[in-house]
Image 1: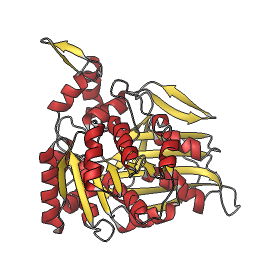
Image 2 (image 1 turned 90 degrees about the vertical axis):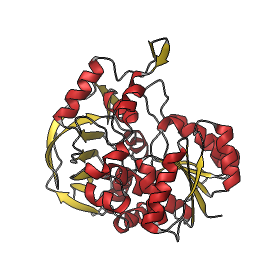
Image 3 (image 1 turned 45 degrees about the vertical axis):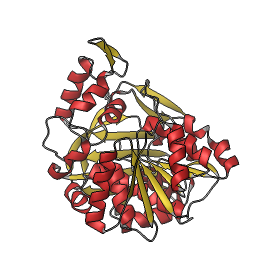
Amino acid sequence: MSKVLVIGAGGVSSVAVHKMAMNADIFPEIALASRTYSKCAAIAESVAARTGVGVDTHEVDAEDVPALVKLIEHLGPKLVVNLALPYQDLPIMDACLATGVDYLDTANYEPKDVAKFEYHWQWAYHDRFREKGIMALLGSGFDPGVTSVFAMWLKKHKLKTIRRLDILDCNGGDHGQAFATNFNPEINIREVTAPARHWENGQFVESPAMGRKVAFDFEGVGPKNMYMMYHEELESLARFIPEMERARFWMTFGDAYIQHLTVLQNVGMTRIDPVLYNGVEIIPLQFLKAVLPEPASLGPTTKGKTNIGDIATGEALDGSGEKTFYVKNICDHEDAYAETGNQAVSYTTGVPAMIGAAMMMQGHWRGEGVFNIEQFDPDPFMAMLNAHGLPWTCEELPGPVEF
């Protein structure tokens, strides 16, 4: 049994399925399912044109557990790769439990009605997955995902301890739109407008959304303003690097994006509670998503680079005292589009989803229960990043970066 079932048919899924097809020795059979069958068909057509590999396509509602169970039982996959929306994580995990099939995702669960993304809902599945003898791998995207693996690679090869950690996510791409998000608008805006949180001295410290801004000069991109915000890998990294004194997540946004988002928030268009319009309940953010450009459509026009990495300070493994290392990847939007038909934001998440799936399919990462990506050997994952389009570099900095 070597089939993989991918659920979801957005830009990340498109990249992951293309890259799986390019690695047919690991993924000899690929099935793709989504609520919108036409999106699956479009991805399958592109994959066939680019690689000559056929993809088996299906229609399914990722929130309908009985329908998911029926599809999984029909297909008999070894692994279900969840590239749908974060609030669909638990139904897909339930279907995997019911069918005894391994599970992988790229982002942790969050309820539809609260912009609160935390791992505890999925960690609560650990005993049930262990008793079933199956494995769930959480957070195999870029951030979370690669950024967590970067930290664990540094702990294995450079630093005995990580005292301070900063994750820097810069998208220096220009898509030519007045306002658009580079991944699902609903999830993107929920993340950005949520209160910021960072880990410090054994607890999370909350601050206003977008309340702290600093400038940073990113290689391949140039100077950009980045904002401190909350991201789920802070929760898992704080758990698996217990000595860490401080961990923060930063993301860059242009002034135009901030201005548009501020206006939309001020007029209520980012609300996630229902409002009554002409006798019908609608959720403003979902309506906004419907009128914004589809992220997958931005590939042909997006130019520039992304630069995402970790800056970590701690005690050096070689006993030479405190040291600071910066490990990062730079990805070109146009190169990503030429290879898979998708821009770099989708590419940098879709490739790690494929690699995490490869780790499980090949048996490099195994366990019974629910695991975060930080819990496994980083070396085979890091090697595949270099081989499959996301090469990384590591440099020693003169000292800790103060911002």
